[in-house]
Image (cartoon, rainbow, N blue to C red; front, side, top):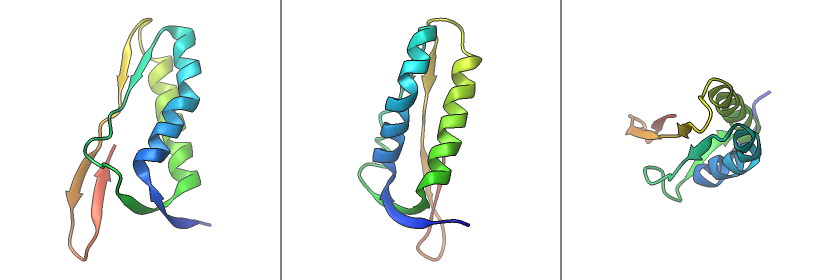
Amino acid sequence: MPNFENYNLHQLISQVVEIMQSQADMKGVRINFDGFEIGSDYYIIDVQRCMQVLINLISNATKFSHKHGEIFIDIVKTPQTNNTTMLEI
């Protein structure tokens, strides 16, 4: 069951990058995320599910990256109708 809460998405992604960096370091892969697009805004998200999806994406990117490669995490923010925003990672 989803557990939605108001959360700083930049902070969440930064936490996941910090968690996954040790795995990437073993392969010599650098993870890049600046978060400029989302800034310090808060979003209503399911933190645990978002974290799990991000961990899986970064883990797969690390596995399939060449040694000494780089992973770039980009966010595209698109305002929608009804005071909502779509984020693409």
